Length: 94
Image (cartoon, rainbow, N blue to C red):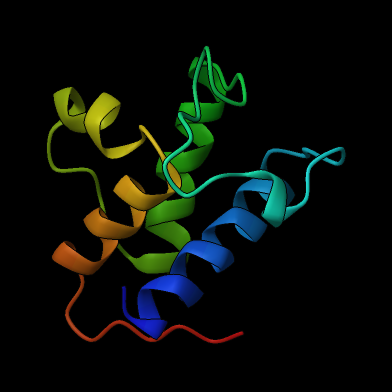
């Protein structure tokens, strides 16, 4: 695992917590491969829309196909993989 990927996943956790107002969670409480929906941290369809907006606003990435949503938003790692695969020059700042 590259340092950039680790930083990206940590930043995503922070952004998810902030964007979805998950005040009871800390980034270290969310596993990289932990499911985000239902049996995982319990996100719902409204949260999915917020994650789509997050990708657009923070990473300038649009979900190319709505059917990809469940795969892309399965976990923090799958979101990070999607970002790295669909961004030109990824810059992660901490």
